[in-house]
Amino acid sequence: MKTELRTNLKAIFGRAYVRLVGAHREPSWLASEALLPLLSTASFVYVYKALKAPEEYTGFVILGGAMTAYWINVLWSMAAQFYWEKEMGNLELYLVAPISRMAILLGMATGGFYLASTRAVFVFVVGSLIFKVNFVVISLGKLALIFFLTQVALYGLGMIFSSLFMLFGREAWHTTNLFQEPIYLLSGFFFPVKSLGFTIGLLASFIPLTLGLDGMRQLAFKGGKESGLLNVNLEIIALVILSIFFLIAAHYALKYMENMGKKEGRLTLRWQ
Amino acid sequence: MAFDRLKENLRTTRLAGKLGWAMEANWADPFLFAIYSIIRPIASSLILVFMYLVVTRGKTSFDLFAYIFLGNTFFMYVYNVLFGISWVIHEDREHYEMLRYIYIAPIRMYYYLFGRGIAKLITTTIAIIITLAFGMIVLKIPIDLLKVNYPLFFITLIVGLFVITCLGILLAGITMLTAHHSFALTEGLGGIFYLACGAIFQIDLLPNWLQYISKALPLTYWLELLRRSILGKSLSLTLAKYSNFQLLLIMLLTTALLALFSDYIYKLIEHVARKKGKIDQVINY
Image (cartoon, rainbow over the protein chains, first blue to last red):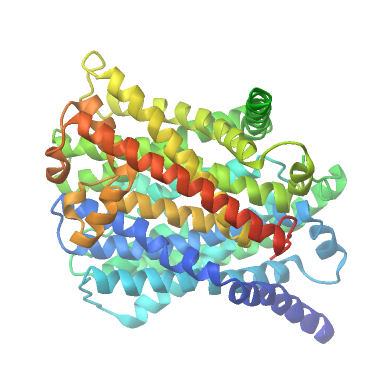
């Protein structure tokens, strides 16, 4: 039991390590991951300026722009990663190693979280400074809690996606793309999700970022509460439930998909 | 001799285009491809629509709405073609590991990349037509198809697509020297143009120093001329003082400069990449 735990911890560290080190070996990454994404976010700020929107909308956009980093990371570096690993021949090595698949994914998530956080922090801090965002934080504790729970639930969802992508062929590319802008829309990355209507907002809450963004906006901006979808406490409870559900579901989904992949001989199938 | 080379380059472009189309469309499930082609561009436009509606409290009758919608729709070409061409380097080098074989084939890489970009152009054109139809039918964007200045529209469109392809090739060169996170680089560079060219707002809102950069980019004039040809008017105070003809001339001039720059930089970077052994680099993180 102890040995198994140590092996899995090593697997987590090993998978995270390549991402942490890889990031620092590529200086171009700093520009492409940190500096340039700020510009797209700035464009959305200017749309609100063109429309003479209330001041808090600038903050909504900056926060949404920062949080896109995590969704992109979960999509491309978690969900689609098993597909890439399969294509590169790494997946079979993971499967024969005496480690949990969840450990590999947790390692990916840790390394990915670091990469995404660099981008998110840069967009958030620099964006807030440039556009002089005015924060009115109601509860810093709740804000931190909601951010943490959003990340747990989000990476849990990423693990479920990984199990699906493990069996995907060349359509993985289109599928990943399909989950980008439509989710930006449904989760209200650049506008309050309430404006999509209560029912759609509620359905979109299955994506942890919907509740996370809505809760953080309510806690960090002056007009946030009026544009909120649900009560913040309710959103925290929902995020706890989603976190537990996604992590358990990911465990079973990975097992199921791996078995199916073995039966159908799709785990080592490349370039198909 | 020159004719043979031209024939060879055209053949490379045509075959690379066919390969790109096969990889883009034929390799995917037709249903998934259809959904992907429809939902993604519409979702991208709807983000702006909701941003607009949430501030104007549901009113879509302002000129600015059509201005934002059209800019965002045509900007899809920039994102998709830039991404499509530069991604070829990553895909062929690290995924299919074919780049080295393409290099030793008797073709010119520049035309191969150009051809691969054509496939992206086709799929993006389909997405743009769908989005425009959605805008006109569902969102009631005031576009009168009988009043569109078609000669101006098509001349502008073709010149713009040439610019975007040149930019894509330039970016493909840069991708040769970077690791496989290059998609973020493409996204970021797309972001520069999205911001500086006023894709979704008037460039008048930008700080002065950024307006100078904006005026040096052919895509600023491209978007302005496309909007003028469709809507018949300009909302940008900075660009309103130029006639269509003047804008067209400036766009052609900046395009020519950018094309020369793209060609020079691409060749330079390619040389460095060969020297540093980056042509068959595989990074697995």
